[in-house]
Length: 114
Image (cartoon, rainbow, N blue to C red; front, side):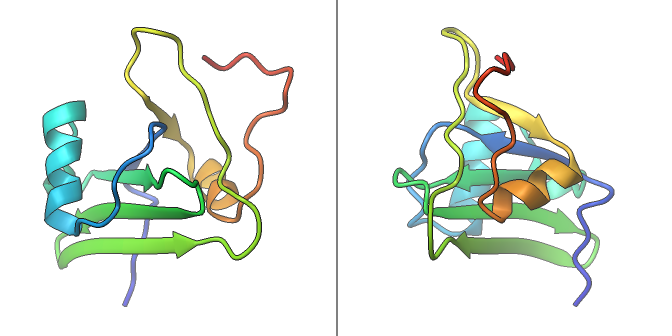
């Protein structure tokens, strides 16, 4: 199985999401609330649980759909903030995605990113 994120735009949903649903439910949330079409093969969306210990990534390619679940044994995924009135999402580079999935910080406390 070859899953590559190199040709997709990665979006992190900052607000917590109920992760009990599967691929189709998360894709529906991405489409209806964020305007992201995961089925086109050009997008990947990362959803976080309320506790920030679990995340799920949904994407697709020409061979099929993908739902990846990542659970941290220690620590939590970084909590990010957005300005009032903005959508609760941000774009990630592949390096940012890797660091985020490993529980590393993307931004230092002094950074003003939103």
